[in-house]
Length: 73
Image (spheres, rainbow, N blue to C red):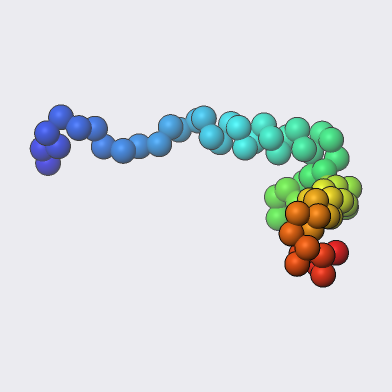
């Protein structure tokens, strides 16, 4: 098949996988993610607590700007 000089699309092989793997390893070393034998990596209780705290803070800030969101706090 003649493509007229244009290359076929192919994503970079190692870049994004390295970033995700490094991010997960960092989260694991901080205790926010743990390895599970059958599921791979899962969020630890400490990680879930962090997510809950941050989401609550974000919702409170949004509720200050948009009062209709206050009912979800």
